[in-house]
Amino acid sequence: MNWRKVILTALAGAYAALWVGGVSAHILKGGPPPDAQWAAPVFLLLAGLIVLFTASAANLGGLLAAAGIGFVAEYMGVSRGFLFGRYVYTGTLQPLLLGVPLVMACAWMILFAYVKQMLLPFKLSKLAEMTISGVWMVAIDLLIDPLAANRLGYWRWIEAGAYYGVPARNFLGWYVVSFMIFGIIRQRPQSDLWARSVGLSILLFFTVIALAYQLALAASVGLALSLAHVALAVISNRRQAEP
Image 1 (cartoon, rainbow, N blue to C red):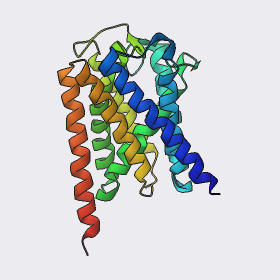
Image 2 (image 1 turned 180 degrees about the horizontal axis):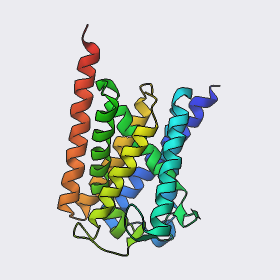
Image 3 (image 1 turned 30 degrees about the vertical axis):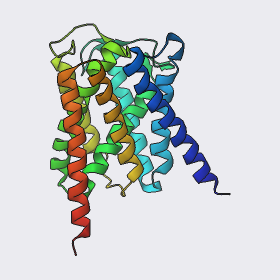
Image 4 (image 1 turned 120 degrees about the horizontal axis):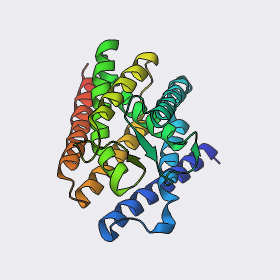
């Protein structure tokens, strides 16, 4: 028996079930029931485990480094108000370490792996990759933060801003941290379809929920990111098919 395949199938099946269940709950019931708070951190954990489990040995170090840098940045944010502005995590994403949910390390790792994979076929210079990646990560946060800080209740902003209550400083912080992560992690990973698929599923998850709650601007960002994913995938496939 191929135990690796069995484990991956189990992880992917559980992740898909939570994806469908979460989207359905928000569309049909206005959100999950109070006794289902466990689902959000498990959802992120499963996504992170899939990315780690399917990564090549050469990719693992970079993925773990991205997770670690992201977690440290979050700790600096909640403890000192540095980088992102003043905010606090609620009890939704348990467990917490030093005031930061452990699964936030998974979130940074997943998004790093996704953006890295999407840019991989284009052989950009290091500076170009860092710049584009920073902008891309900010665009993803423009989709996620309005939901996570409000309807989903993952965190709360102490100093509100104009964009769905999210301060502009947060997006500058996201750019700086992302720019740094993509600059520090210098390896060029091997192609990984699972990392791209998990990243896209996260975009679609938040896009559908944004549509359900009629967050037009956030949903538009999500749709644009999803269309960009498709366009880049088509361009990448054409390049690979060229002699």
